[in-house]
Image (cartoon, rainbow, N blue to C red):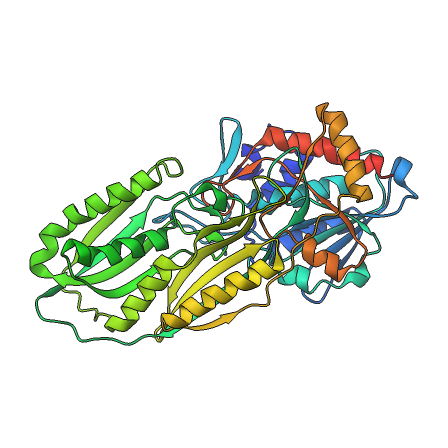
Length: 489
């Protein structure tokens, strides 16, 4: 028994947690899912199930029906194999080789200083539990496990639909128990790049590193409504304000974030200032930080700015126009919620996440992740971002993006699932759409005629090292899935 298996040994249902612990023991960054795929294939072979892999690398496992569902029409159960890999600064963890270290704290399961991978490891584990005979009655199952959901959805986008005969699909990648999702946002990434150019180092200047840390971060779709601080944007704001406080600076380096679909928790800048101004810097920044903390009193527990003088560092400053353009683009682009839905109360329609600023030897690249349930609004937002990027001196490209999933409130799957949930809770379930990129929108295009529903357990702070799942909620969803599959027989 591994350490992770010991951590979950007392959780119910054991069949789900056994598989989830196995996932935690195996690296599964996006694009590097081979070890967990090997585990799934071996599991399928051990149970005598047919298992297929399409050209892109998705897995499809065929499970015969049981009991009352032996002759029923098949049902697709779907989840994705990869996970977002985020860790706190200073934490030594190699996501390509090291297992996730699970820890149980109160009524929630976390990882130690990294993302947990409950998104979507719990969903995949539930699929496997269903296939393994957890339920006495279920239709034939087609377990669809996609790859690369978190970094572009290439698995879903390139799915070979010929492997699937079912036209009823249950997606288990939602993160709020008791809610049925019937729609999702589409999304697109915008990548802005500018070549680096430098000014000479001025005599009498000193290099200083500024590190903004301790922000909560989170999922750039689900958590975008929570007004959490974006470390890249906040640090750019501090730097833009410094000259107005009487402290001129030259920017040498500026970077932050690690995933385009995670709200950045940390950002770092290296600046040059006159050596005699160093003593004033902490006091000025302390006042600026106090103002930022007041703006985020309700959304951020605490965050800090660390100041480090780099004695002897001769890093040259960026050319002034480049530095100004970079900071302006990072500070002034639309960030967070852009518009709210007019048809579904409380739902974000359109948003933008300034996700990552990275450097190479030749260029700086700023990547933003935009989402909307309205295709025209998404086009407009991306056009605005591109126009602003050009004004700031950047060249711009965007990916093809992925489509949203339009709600169908007359769906037979929705009607049956609502009945099951109403029986369980004693009330009508909430039916809504989600401001995130579920694969359902893509799958509906790849496999025409799919009738889809999405639900899942209570997962908080996905895409951040604070990610957690409620085991009691997983047990509830396990029961609901069994009841729904029986109703679909």
